[in-house]
Image: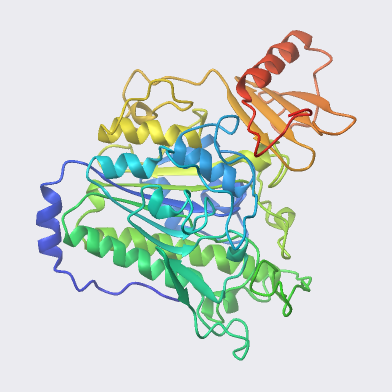
Length: 475
């Protein structure tokens, strides 16, 4: 596994440059389909995540954080544009030829643009999924100075792909070819991690504040890690049911999931590898002398998946919540979030403050002075992080999902309204009181007609039609 060695840059030189910098650096690590219960600091007992646990001990652990929505591309669109899923430009995982997803439109305002405007160098390392190279959604068109990784989230299903992208340059991975057995070439997350560490080195050597977005593909199916001590330590620990996947043909390395004889062991090893990446990043920030001036955020883009041999029930990946990826029940949209910021966020704190991905952009705007927050879907949570008074709260949170006949959800206080099978002949509403029923087991719509009507009205108001991604009948 790649672990960054000592940097070639003189730490004393880096530190002196960063000491004159008033703006804090930001490292945002976004896991892919990591469930609430997949971290030991959120209850995982079958394996441990010590480095992520350390982030929680040194910062704030959120218990009511929600992703943008329940699948990848629209959730990330909410995150990077500060809009909820009834307003955001990307509402679904729509594939576009030759590779990639429906692009963010020209003129989009993103977190990365904001950061560039106030002097930050910006980088993204991992999975993009918001527009193919050369389109309006190209990372370099959306405020990212340096991109390395998967442009297309479908191709990101493979951990041994035949190519990655470095900005507009296609990087051929010459050892990930048919002649070399699958799993013996270049493991993409290791290479991406190496590039992210190099970005940190370069930014610090230039004395610039940096925003590093690290949207790793782990632990999205497929389930595979290099044959090293991590996977070996987990084999034999769990009962296993081999997964028969796609190991040849047109979908191999292009969206299909490989076979895995030890899916439970592979899943645990993958998250352990991610945990090691996190520890490596934190240590590297310390070695560079910039840890004290860096905000580190860790979260996941949606709830846990069930593809490729993954077994979220065995690992209790969704914790106490009902549902998985693609559900608008809590298990599909409630995600772990940890924020660590030395000297600002009180160590070892926990908050049940209700927030979502669209709160990050206004938070960064207040933090850096890169723009006002008026009229945004999100609210700045900077007062909460810094322990100050005056933290605003949401009136409600709104979510929608385009597939499976369309789904919507509204969260207001203890109430959660779910609208299912919207485009079918039998749409239905379900109402839950999460204070009394956090597992969403008992529909109380019939007993609370006024609450039902109120939340239905919010759904109508919050959903702005998008002709590219229809969710309601007649759109």
